[in-house]
Image (cartoon, rainbow, N blue to C red; front, top):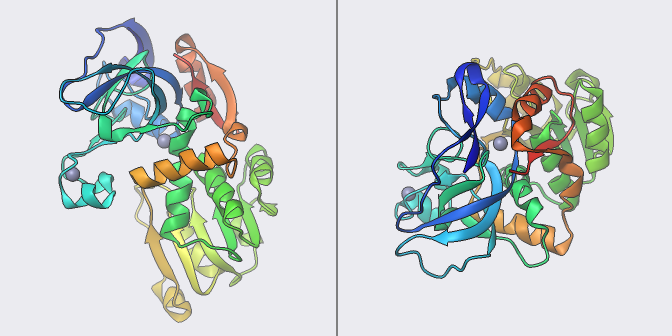
Length: 326
Ligand SMILES: [Zn+2]
Ligand SMILES: [Zn+2]
């Protein structure tokens, strides 16, 4: 098969590599579509040569491993890119990212979607509902991220919502806030094209910095930018009893003046990944029209354009997802 494999310096080389073959409990997929993600930009320099990245993808089942029952070829699936043991308490509760044996697809644990073929466990393959365009399989993952954030902070009807950062994570969080009946949705992003994307996803107000929003007025605040200084800013804008969900990734230590949070009795949660049930909820929402994935697509590229797509992503020239059709 053809694949974009990591060469030196985080660049990709389009090479012919051996086809993967499915083992017990696994499926072979012909990749239909795969998204490029901000975490790929950050992670690629740390990936070993030969790695196949890509964790936002779906495909058609074209091979079924031994002892894999209940599947037939031709089924279109979205991939939950965390392959887990299926037997521990975390797997039983759906929080597969906490499984001690978890392998991250496309991020060093198992080959990902920047290739014509990929092997995943059957448990990580979530069938698309009939009628969903198979190309949308790559967008189930980003919308599951937003749903997991909304669920972690119990986002509900009538909430006044502030979303800090209008990259893909922020945009899908905004989409779920609108779908769940938020009263007011303010999006914060310094980049103009992201602010206009936020408005088209349902933000009722867009601003360039968190200092511009009124203190003490939001019942739900999602930090989707990954800047260490933002936790204090989130506490400032939250109203008493507000729920704050930290979803941005930063390795910087985070300064935190806890007295402000204490006096408001805010709760601060953290959200990462998603559950199989959340993947199924996204699939149902695509099928039922509650969530329209189309606006998340910026453009399509082929395998030979992977390096250019990464350059665009690193320079924030696109407001939404660049997607690969291998
Ligand atoms: Zn991602
Ligand atoms: Zn497990």
